[in-house]
Length: 208
Image (cartoon, rainbow, N blue to C red):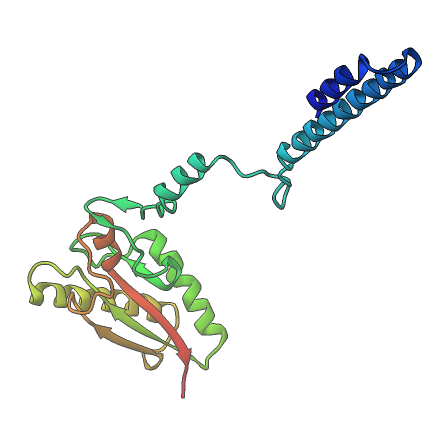
């Protein structure tokens, strides 16, 4: 457009009167200014369109990372679940709570001082409420001879029952069962887990 204006001005310049020549030059300058303004407006419009929009922050004020970072997180998968604690060769799971059983050492039916104190508390509860009765369930390890562990569990039950009778609990309120190693609730192989199997369960209930 600027070239066309200049060409027309040059063609008319030689034929016009001096004052008309001045007028044409003035119009030519105005034409050039208009073209320059139009070009500037086009450039500004392009700049506005090319400007990237601001990314709003995610909830909580955190902005997502790059695509590469997101891909790395996705490829890694969910966080691995924590592994259960291990004791010895096997995973340790308590067989029964300590306050509901009397425990023994390996191959023994002898009551330790700690277990006697526990039985004394049980005897006090039985003496305070004569409607209660107790079932003694003897256990042993699940490895070895069946006959040996059956006899051992019987001896353990007998030791607990005898202690309770000495505390004034009548034998009619004491029931007994000896399971040996046949019905261990949670068979295991670690030394600590087997220690939990050497016990007599204390099951209290209301007499019918």
